[in-house]
Image (cartoon, rainbow, N blue to C red; front, side, top):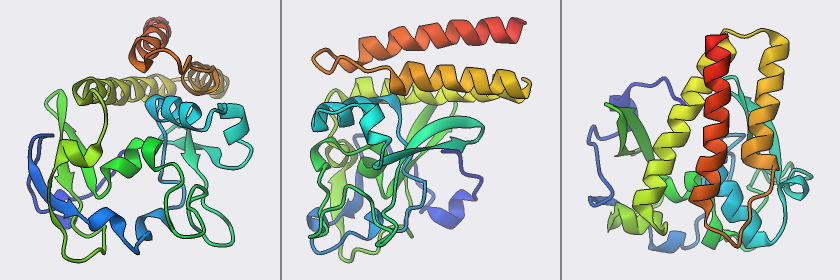
Length: 224
């Protein structure tokens, strides 16, 4: 999600790589679930999140959209996000004891918090959102350990690819009519989120195959 903010207001001004140490470790969030509450529609999912989630719960996207997930427009593109429970305003995957029930396959947004990403120079780096997490007495941890994502290099390549694709989709939609916007948005939604992934096969080849199809459609749209 794009944020129009002054970096000096939300960070310590430093840029980090996955190999750097940052003071964000919080004793496994013991007795704290503050970041799982009052998040509104901000926990937006990407295709890797959906692959991991449907694999972890052995379900499908259609079922998740019946309660745990919903669709919203994010800077012009329809994307899924986690729903907050109406009574508690907490994440629908938070247990009664305040623990994440999908921790092993939680979304990238949750793994990243309280870090953020800043995209510049054709790549991205991490930054620490110093005002986001209230947990006291944090210790240092290497970012790649904090993220705890297999094949992190591959994942970072995917993150950049998805970011760039969304940017180009927004460019196309901005110059399209209402019907064209709706049609292309539905095509993107179907291609990356509704159409099931084979969770017995690796994610990245499946993603890049779909990515190329949408890239081709964007090229045709921009030429038209």
